[in-house]
Amino acid sequence: PRPLPLPPPPILVPAANVIAWNCCLQPITGGQCFLCSDTPVGPCGTGQAIRQSAVPAFVLSSENDMLRSGVSRAADILGERGTLVTIKESALDLSTPVTRATTSWGAFLVADCYGSPLYGASRHFALADDVDAVSSAPVAAFLKQQFCGGAPLQGSDTMVEGRLNSKAAGSLCAPFPLFVCCFES
Image (cartoon, rainbow, N blue to C red; front, side):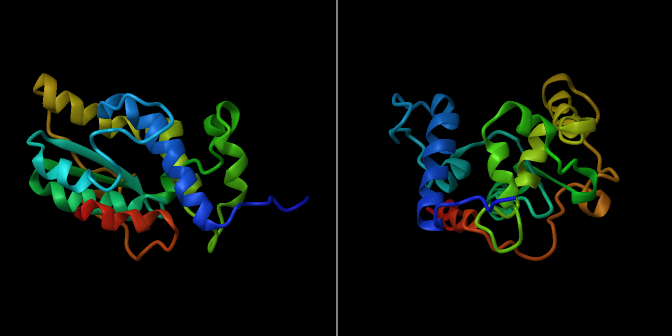
């Protein structure tokens, strides 16, 4: 097999911002431009927007998720309004079958190795793939609790430490956690 050529981190991080922030979040943040950043909540305005919100929030991550640092910081800012669920890596299907079959992101997951700018990507996409309802079960329970008066969300054996609001141990050294400082703006 031939190595996959990857652009250097100074290109990858802004590229991820353009791809993920503008295209995916633009419709829900009120922006008018699909490919440029005109959203009222920019990537470095997230902390302020979280602080101004008064609604309960659900925050999902996993051990070694490439966005774990930012998600943890968001949970810290939310405080009691936030419910953090950190899924154990062992509960995830890291083969990411849905991502590989239905998106172009699958091609980048071959570079998910320690030291790579994409380290943690397979864990991030495994949450979205939701094999065996590992991610959707706590989301559904949270929504039932909030909107239907359902039972409070409980910890489970798929969660770090088997409980809610537990963060994965250690730190993650990948470019994407650099956005954690943006939560302070």
